[in-house]
Amino acid sequence: MRGTGRPRDIVIVGASLAGLRAAETLRAEGFTGRLTLVGAEQHAPYDRPPLSKQFLTDSTPADTALPVPDGLGASWLLGRPAVGLDPDSRIVTLADGSRLPYDGLLIATGAAARSGVIPGEPGPGQGVFTLRGRDDATALRAALTPGRKLLVVGAGFLGGEAAAAGRALGLDVTLVEAGAVPLERAVGTEAGAFMGMLHREAGIDLRTGTTVAEFRTAHASAAEFRTATASAAVAEPGAPVGALTGARLSDGRTLAADVALLALGAVPATGWLAGSGIEAAGGVPTDARLRALFPDGAVVPGVVAAGDAARVPQPLAGGAAPALGHWSGAVEQGAAAARTLLLGEAAPVFAEVPSFWSDVHGVRLRSVGLPALGDTVKVHECDREARRLEVSYHLDGRLVGALTIGRTSRLAAYRRALTEYVAAQHA
Ligand SMILES: Cc1cc2nc3c(=O)[nH]c(=O)nc-3n(C[C@H](O)[C@H](O)[C@H](O)COP(=O)(O)OP(=O)(O)OC[C@H]3O[C@@H](n4cnc5c(N)ncnc54)[C@H](O)[C@@H]3O)c2cc1C
Image (cartoon, rainbow, N blue to C red; front, side, top):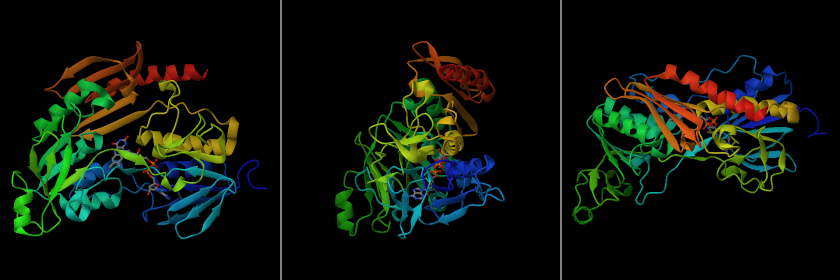
């Protein structure tokens, strides 16, 4: 009977990083049953981090495909998004109406770029882009031609990298950020100010403490255009109707733009779980073994979640489950969730120390732990000329994270200390 003992039929929804790592782990751990990977995109699994970096700047972008091991023995259902889950009968429904029964289900549908929050927002055809997948990056790349004016909305990691890519390609770049410095909530004022300095040194017009209140687009008639832009330094009268011409900021200033990138964060791609009884708008809530939970805390039988679609308790955060969206988290959670499918209660508790990197203006930023948790930041080195930074984050005196720029080797000691702390929590 389905649903008892070791699973014989496993479905993974989300055929990307976490999903692929889960599939590899299942086979490595001896799973010999039927394995099906369902993906919304037509593409086989590929890596996303290069999409805001080399993929935009290299004259011939490298293939970002993730290697799929020979002999994985999986069925791939690509270009066929899942649209529903019935956890009682253990069936996943796809957009084409097909129904996939499972003993074990792994949810790894990642996240989607946030959009649709700024008035007047046109689409990619009119010059306003988001960046999550390879198709987005291909479209954005084609729009980033030298001399154009690029507006990047949001100076988080992705926005900062894309702004840097735009400058490297010879565009005029304006980077608009609501916070007082870039990345303030994620890494604090010190590291954020350092990033701001790097952006300005590269010639990016960084505007902080302001937001994009409205996009401006070209109007149908010259009269309408004149009325709409009477007080604004925006828009080329020759732009095609509907095309992006600029934006008005919340501080009242206006700016011209031919291309804009919305870098406003990501939302878990969990809409397909509506009606399943799992409340997943903020990510699928899981227990410490990555088993999906109903709102009353009961385990959803046979269902685990991993990666950007999941909200996983972090030992460093005292078991709270912050939204992280890190590459390493997807890899480690994919593997851990697969083990839970096979071993259930006997699977190890997930005890990751989160880590993250970003490449911007030729320097590498790296972090371990959860910098956003810190109530105190200690600056151990800040050398603006040499572009080196080392900071650590503490909560009630306890180390919770560290960040370096151009000093990756310094992270190892912090990682050790954080790993020891997490291990002690589970001892
Ligand atoms: C441009 C970019 C740059 C990044 N750079 C860095 C970096 O420098 N460092 C870092 O640590 N992290 C970085 N990240 C984050 C990292 O890539 C993600 O954390 C990681 O990709 C998450 O993997 P995932 O498998 O959980 O989700 P995803 O990679 O988002 O994969 C989810 C898959 O599920 C599919 N899917 C969605 N809905 C459905 C459905 N209903 N049915 C079937 N399939 C569905 C999606 O199409 C997608 O293929 C970056 C992300 C982006 C977008």
